[in-house]
Length: 402
Image (tube, rainbow, N blue to C red; front, side):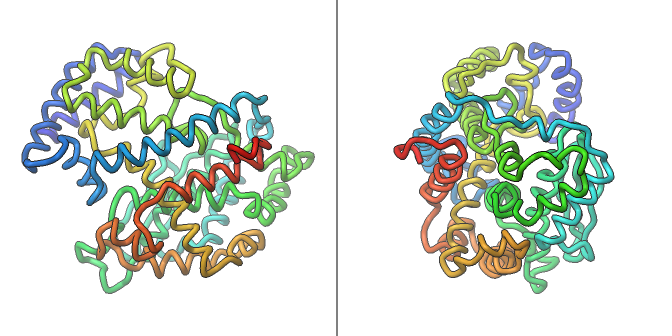
């Protein structure tokens, strides 16, 4: 029943979102909420009705734990966002020129291979929405999209999916074909895509190596753009309406809004008919912007309109938090990693991730894997420290925020 309903709901959503027609989706969403609650009841008793849905994606995570983590994260993010956004916006016009599709694909493909994605066991193809898919131990494919007016879209989408793929390619061969032969959870999986896409590929060191060949590939567009200006452009922070377009600093505020709304819907504290208004209020409170319509508001994400209400969005933020924690743990025995990245060498980092995370597949529950690899439970400290250090330097923030 849930599968059939999800298919019908998705089909209606593909029409309703462009038409800005939330009213037609409300009955579907009511049914989705009913089915999500029914599913959770199969796992009763529970502490919170969302717990079974959360546990499906990230075993061992609970509503209470996520509320605590997200509360800490929001308290750290809001002043950081305000301090950055009170300054003039970074100039990212160098990314908004005309860049040929073939050149973008060649550069992105070469970068993914240099990071460690094994093309002998995979391939890169075009799609509308990038994804990674695994057919077998020897066949892990990625897709990307190209916007000829946005240089960052194809590159960072490719490296994001390559992060997922390197995780799957790194699972021990002995686990292939077994229930343990894949990534352990949505959050841990997302940590690998975010680590390579953001922490590595948006670092200045990465572009010390990769910017000269990028300038050669697009000499007409980038010849006069210094590497510091390019680095600032790809790390531009700005309040925005769309989650998937959000920058590293504001992104989690989008996720936490959705997490809060779905908890309130599951608890019966937010009626479906009131969702658009609650969405606008939440966006205005946390991001200081409000969508002019539902198309760019509560209709923008497909998750609630094709699956369950609850259990999906939180994994994106878990991934961001764990990416910083895993990277910090890798630096402890290997402080040379940033210098290697600046030389285009990624073997040490890739090997640490393979040995401590990838090869285990789903052998250990997520929380145990985190403790084994980093020495502690999931912690917000490395992630907030990473954001403050990086963006404090980029935006010359006061020491209190840096």
